[in-house]
Length: 256
Image (cartoon, rainbow, N blue to C red):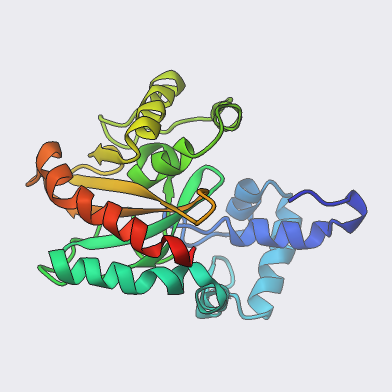
């Protein structure tokens, strides 16, 4: 969304930038680290950290700051008010009960995808992945099955803009890090209408994803199944899981 400059409140933007500086790689920040991550001066970052701590969104030991449980109010409000997670949750639960695997619904947010709904596994306990697969988890779009499905929904000019100058981080030896190769893969995903990714985001992890479209045909999210280990060959995974994913996508279409 684009707004007039006069309507833009810079203080709020800076405060949100400080909050977004905290992630799985940096769970505790001091003013110097927060300033570097948020693109602020150390003095400005310190004021924002102290204000957020005063409001209860951060905790501190006097030097370092970390997120407090109060930040969950944001995610809780989204999950309670957004139609998408509520519409998809029953289908995710049914798929998990039917297969014993874990399923997620994901949306694109800039260079990352965000998990907005997720089932648990009804079979063996789900292995905890290094980057996490919890609600609200943010994963790099270029290295995930869901990210590629959502990128495939972009118009060619939009995809070109998304790829322009973007650093595609190598997470495993299998990760595609060249824009040209990624574009070719995304074109294939668009033709196939699904994406299989093996050990590109994390070693020992496979995923299969399909687009979730509304009644107007627009892709609003992606649905995937994630499996730890390499017990499935791609052909086997497609044969056993792809029909279930496509059926689920048709089932929820009228709800999106």
